[in-house]
Image 1 (cartoon, rainbow, N blue to C red):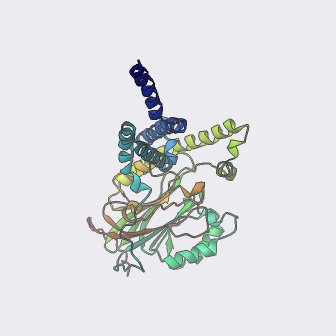
Image 2: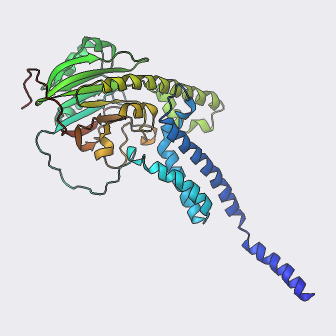
Length: 390
């Protein structure tokens, strides 16, 4: 009888000792929910870059916070490793490893860091793309002089501006400050927000047509040495997120706002509508790139992140200069917790990317993007009778 009671109550005490504490059960429950949401978010991100927003809209919104979703999934996987929950670790690792193939779109590990100013051989092509916000900073102060001085300091061979002023008087003023550069100067640009300046010979410029919404863009064929390069400068549909919307999100006012459902729904609706417009604009731009008989440089403000449908459509068969030569997390939009890289320089495989940087100049709500390129794969030569750059 004594042995019976010993076995019974001894086993009960052993089971109680093996039972996890209440805090561990609560933590596991919370992390299980987080893990499921992170996996669902990653699935939406993976699918969203391939599905047009105008056909399946609900995949287009999670891509805006793709890095945050991926970091959450990684943190969840690490938690399950610490908790020795190997089934959960295996499930989370599948998605974390799959996401590694896209990390270079957001972050580049600086393994071989160089100190000092690197030396570049002569003949490299320096390209600057900059959304100048009509040359106004956050306080809406005029920054025309500081931006043009910055351009002269960087000495790019090609300059692509987005959100460029439309007033003829302002354009003439900027043309005077950009001495040494030739503008495209298309008359129809009075309806748009882009302009190109270059030290190379300009064979011809055209306005990009056929895009819905408020997007604007131009193409310019440039004579670089004995080669011809097609430059594309584009400003895709804006997100229509106002300064009040940015403050509403950044200051977490939605936590205490009793009408937050209506406000958040309005923001999401505008994001979705503009995602659909950018998808259509990206398809137009893709046809222009495919039809180019020359190597292509695409510069611009896409107003979309690297995991979006619009970016993937435009960047297909092109190299992202950040992915080739960038370092760290190079955001280009000064807002939303410095998470967004929405300004790009993309090039056809005819180019080698020698360097990439995002200079931290406080003159707009965007940072400029600067890249050095080298034309390596020589296509057929085109001689239009223009003098080559010395």
